[in-house]
View 1: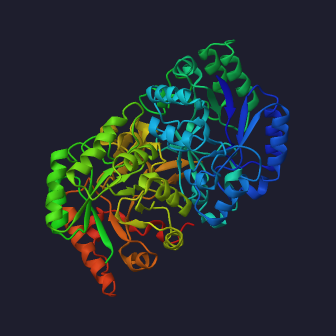
View 2 (view 1 turned 120 degrees about the horizontal axis):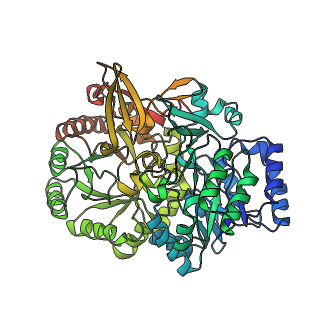
Length: 303
Length: 326
């Protein structure tokens, strides 16, 4: 098993992104998918960082792919997808409609926002030249095992959500703008104030969700720290780590040392907890009873 | 005339909808293959065959929703649902999963295929992909598009579009939302349920009724006020000192007044949500909308405020169709 870093969900300054990928190049991850996933309006602010990030990552021996947007609705968003084809890199499809723009025979990756729930869908995507598939985070371990096996039979690595606030929903409506009483078209990029999203708690003060523009995330950070042996037995090829604004290099290194057998799952979880925003971990999609659940010892504030 | 597609959670609701003037009804089997997998609802294969015979005798169509995402290792359950729909004489199946669409196109080529809203096909590329790869003939559009966007989509596709005009309102891209399973372990995609009643708990606390879903408080209502059902995305939450309906107000969709515009935008069919609703509700809504589509076809104005009392005390909205939050 190795590590894939997924696209950054949040709206960060260009300089922040530059140093993020420069630092990431020095970590023991095998590959990186990058690009704007959440909101096409953000892209002009950091588009110029993408070539430099690709260069620094490739120079460090990382495989690199470019993500599509998660929800394509506007005409200019189709153009953005078309532009991804200009670079000689695999595209990671996170909205199925981007497939139309991928020339026949050109390999692509499938990201966690495409609904791959069963073998029929997995095989159809592989017939269309999918070369790597990250499963949706919602799947149970039983489903993961079936799909990882089916992928292995077809020679296509299957990866799962390994770390990060979970992408639970995507909408045409921007919740950051709504919280600031602004229309989406005049949002003034308020999502940029929250480098790990804006937390949404219940009226009883339970940590619950996090909004990031048009995206709704879990407030807990999902971590497969305690599940790595199960995932290994299931035939999973890689864990996907989703960027957060702080401590991300340490997090990559911590997972790599777990994969290398240098630490236990419990030790990894204990190391991660103070490093993640909000301090809460979850792994309930894999083994139940609900996505927000954590199979290890619950620490800190009750959730 | 625009086709009026009406919900039928039970055989009795199906008969009521047909008798009230539905051009088509949609329904599903009583298992996890359909996205309204609620206790006490839905059809056995025998019910389905009888329902189709009843509808066809009265000139109405039956569309069978098999619109969850088949579970890995359990695809035969969904494949049997397709075979049962065809054997019952269904006029079309409504599907969301690409693996299931591929199976249907290959094994049931004569069974007409509609694309469920759960596939979240929100642009012409996606729709053309489903049309070309799987022979999909009609697409149910997500409730996130404006009328102008619907018109633009219809200019670039060759298949029919069906749009929601009344009932519940999802604000998230449908089929791409796991909020419910994050809180409860049960999701629309996998289990055909959202914010399921099995995971709802109410508790009276200090003069308020707290409604919780999977242990998470969705809203607190002062005693004596009507308490809405705790649907997760319509809950009241707090963020950095602000408290309110952060995702969506507890509103329901009523786009009656937009029917003429939707017709001009090229929509072929109008869909009413509510397979979980009673027979009496279905009959009344169907009768009212049948009058509206007939008025539209005759170039007459839409009747005003027809269904205000059916929105159960919730405010009605025209949702994304008008650009209020774009």
